[in-house]
Amino acid sequence: MPSKQSEAVVRHWAAARRTSQLPVAEQPDRETADHAWAGLTGEPRDVDYLSVSEVSGLWIVPKDAVPDRVLLCMHGGGFLSGSIYSHRKMFGHLAKAVGARALVFDYRLAPEHTHPAQVDDATAVYRWLLDQGVDPARIAFAGDSCGGGLVITTQLRAREQGLPLPAAALPFSPWVDMEVTGDSYDANRDRDAFFHRDLVRDLATMYVGAGGDPRDPLVNPLHGDLTGFGPIYIQVGGDEVLVDDARLLYEHARKAGVEARLDVFPDMQHTFQMAAGRAPEADDAIQRMAAWLRPVLHREP
Image (cartoon, rainbow, N blue to C red; front, top):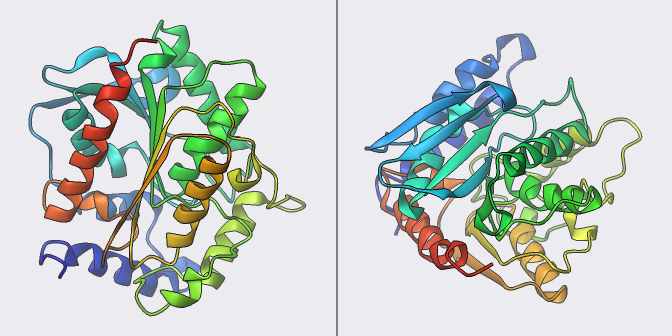
């Protein structure tokens, strides 16, 4: 049975669904929405935040973090919303659990900016991080929702540009299937508090843009070649309509010979990890990611 604390995630998404049905003029602006989303997360102790003007981001620096281990964090929000401020606390919990620094950054948002703006922005930040002298064998990508998809497509773009790939990837509640084909849209239709097939199809259309191809590997990594990628650990909530996105990504990675792990958390909603510091299920998920990642980042290159 879900904890009482995790019910806040259900309430958040239920409120978001009601808001999404309002006329556009009555919907909150992005900053207000970010503030509401950030309110799900407890403030992690002993974590500092330092602005990075070169990449419009924040360094997240836990006390006693190993400085040469870095998480490159990509926030969710359907490519329409989300920011370093909506997600800094959640990624702060993850960085603290791993014992590494984290860099979370803003990227251009739809509908003003469509694909490939987001993947290009993320790749540019990764290039900047490498230029700072950070060893790619000590870097892991982490991201939720659309950021979980960006965790994979950024690697595809980086490889195109001749950049080395990171050591590992942590996509959670990943949104990757821009064709919106998963059976879980029907199976979890009455369990997911926010998402449904038509909504996700509309989000995909806004992201891909006029004339865009939902089968482009840099849009939909299920059509990308993941051969040679580092290990991938995927988490997803059992009540999400996007649970098949996670399963399809897991299967696609395995077929490419990539070491992959998938954990499905029963009764949990989309990006339930945002309740870190408050809900035991979210804290458990964060600790699982950290326990999986620490030995990967400490391997000999």
